[in-house]
View 1 (cartoon, rainbow, N blue to C red):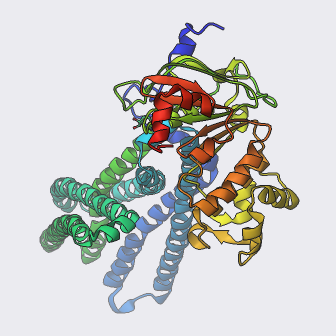
View 2: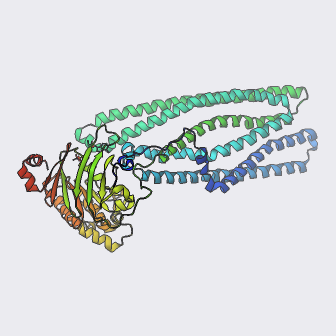
View 3: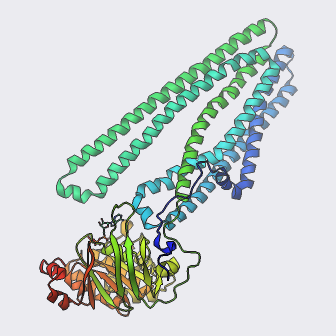
Length: 597
Ligand code: ATP
């Protein structure tokens, strides 16, 4: 195998695919595709509703004209005819409105669901180095808040644009045919209205952005203090935390105040201009009536149509901010989607069928992205299939890092890690990770039942296999004692388990998974003696017939090791059996003397 091949010696980190800086219009529009039929129906309906709404003031005008012309000889038949038409229009408008509101939002929500599913699935593929850099809270806000804004844009954007265009153009044509000078008078105000909305909108957007930053600050502070509540209370840090939270809270309040001021100013200034338009229309209209250029029915229709001209101007300006927010949301979505996992299957990767379990680190060099210097430097170590090796050494020397290279949680930059004689990058990730089982000090249990959590080791396991795994892990007894046995909910909504119990559940998972390679990363260092004994017994049973690598802080953990490897910042400095290393009087003997392990 050629390790000088750049394919092997170069490691990529989770970087972004280039975006050429342009907004990805094609990708943005592609989410409409599966829902095109329904969305077209919504748009057609929105156009019909808008057209229907245009006709209503015309009917009012006609009815008024009839009344004015006929005076006392008011024709009931005609009034009934116009009234019926009005009723029909109202029905069309509101039934159509119902369809547009309901189904339009549904289309937006469907697209949001599709995008969210895609984003979540992609986040799951991104490697450890990506998740090292991102806070869970930030990723969650991308999955929720950002996409809400996007769904609003997806359906309201085209829908509002169509609706208001039809109403604006339609109203303008109708008004122009009724009376051009009066129409132009109203029109003269529109640029003022547009400008006003744009300026205020900009200011409003700024304050809204501030708001978001400030509430994020409140969230972050609360999360930090509440997650660390045990430390806070044990150090009596409540006052300090209240102070920090108080500052964030006050900043949010001030930013809200600024928003309300901008909003109040905007809406009332806008309202003033709207009223001025009405007054101007009435004044100019009266002059036109006095000059017999217009009649009362025309003026009434005019007043009814004014909103059709002003509302689109206001909405258009509002849409520009909606568009901005939606576009930003989509760009933030694409930023994650363009991030390529740093650890991926190579195109020619092979499936690792039942591995024998021999591991070799061959001249391995590794550095974390965020670090200046290398954590591991040209390290070599050979572990035979079925061997039980303990890894000891000072804190921070890279023991955990070394272990995480075997299942490719990270890829090496130099040299190679081999499993069954082949570079781990030659195996498919799924089969490689299937061959390696890890027990860590921090056991993560998912929400759900005890049974669900054990089944995580092999999703198709039946009940008998789950119970057998729990027995082997020494967990059956305490599970049977839980309120609903294997069906007991654990985690946030259910019972809390002790550290040792959690460990045994995680060991049961591994009995089910049955991997040929086992990594025990300080699995028992946080347990008291009694729990440790139970977990240790289970681990010893688990280790039988598997290649086992133990990161150990306690002597008891390495008792069964056929070989002890001492890792320091200078790499592997010693290795051998316990007695042999003690006799040598080197670092191990020193660590041992200090009872470091
Ligand atoms: P301990 O015995 O204290 O658990 P260790 O020997 O297992 O330590 P590692 O956890 O492998 O040591 O860490 C080795 C070095 O790499 C340390 O300096 C640590 O700060 C750094 N390190 C570990 N994980 C990361 C990470 N995800 N990103 C950046 N640096 C890291």
